[in-house]
Length: 158
Image (cartoon, rainbow, N blue to C red):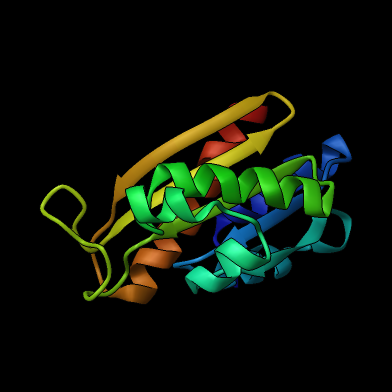
């Protein structure tokens, strides 16, 4: 069952007659799934793409290789391009891109520890660039990130 904030965010999107699409790396489709479980999913959910591996980011969503090499796949620079490309691909009013680190073994550093999530959200009322470090196991990190995405959207479009 989706959280109250995701359900409320979905209701607001539906009331506006808008739709939403997702580009998900670290969350691997969980945001799409959470939004699909609301009573408003049929009105708002356009679709999503799981771009977990660099190959998908580069070959399908056309993130330039130099951005991934310079900033890593889990970065605001890459997340912004994912959002822009996904927005065009799905022709969506709201597009959420999310990358980050839910487990060790990626590009984590002292400045970017496990739990770091990058959001880039495109809305008709402006774009949102947000970075946050969440604690917990991978599922807890992803669910907290899903709620944060819904909160960020709601604040921007309300």
